[in-house]
Image (cartoon, rainbow, N blue to C red; front, top):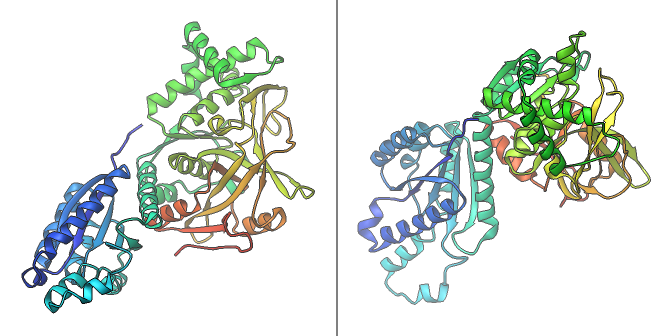
Length: 489
């Protein structure tokens, strides 16, 4: 897999005319900018800091410098009043999304001390050090009229976790956008016939998220599998024993068959540098391919758990959703509605095929299935529930007008009885209640598959959507117990 080091551009703005008028103001504001630099660096980003831009001439140079540095996102720190002419040349040339940091040094001016200064020139200089909010409307006006996407974080330079949590989320969203832009998605096999909702526009997916789609033949995986050694199979069997709770009724021959395929999958992923994959194979009686594709579930579960999410039924959109959740550190397991439980007001959701065993509640069980329902073949499958606690559902939706939108809901994975049928299966509670959640989610027209990850991260996904220039529809946030929220732009 190709990895790209995220680069964040940082610059402050001020007004050159002030420096001769107000002694020490420029140095003071530069000091604040260094504080921002340190905090951004501590968020895990590589920072390209061009300092304080205070004239249109410097702005022209800064725009070229940011483009040359190949920054992914700009943070504009507004230190005091500044002309919009010192900003627009920077952001137009850089041509990446901009986050405006409107952060004052302290919660409030010390009015008593301020008014005792006596020297009105010194007083004005002191006031200007707190004047970051002043030019933001001017900048917003120019950004809007110039069609420059921008976002705001308003608060304090120090002692303001809310503001800096927002900054951290913008950086995390930019990281995920970068992961998607450089991801290699492998597509192996073909669609499950008749599932009209899952058919995807591959060009639209690339245009929206970036990345590359690699078309892979099942024959290639089968050919690799035939070259797997006994030693490699033994090694993977040890991994199975460590990572799974293998049930006593699993035949040794099936475990070895799954191990052989898991080795081949690892080699296939390495050969093509894949960061995610979607697959389905109906088969026509070709024995090697049937043997391969009926034994992929354990290997694909291991791939998913180590950051290479694998979606069944050739669900391209859901492979994208799973990769997004995984890049946010939330996991990302393939799921769909399984049943409604009106007694406990929960929705049962799960799927056959691979699961994200790294976000399982306890150890994932391996069970033999004598029929893969709705599919050909039989073999070993995984049974797990998503870890109890907060979860976020994500669906990548293609709309009738040729757009991609993100559909999001926050809920909770809760304990209780599940269907022990050798599939992933969890019980989810939503702030809207089961009945209203299902209706609200369905009203947006998603495919019947979605991805589920741990934690409540709708605000991060919303920021990702903004950076990508698409809409995010948030069906419910856990903190909003009585309202349906739709956000986007």
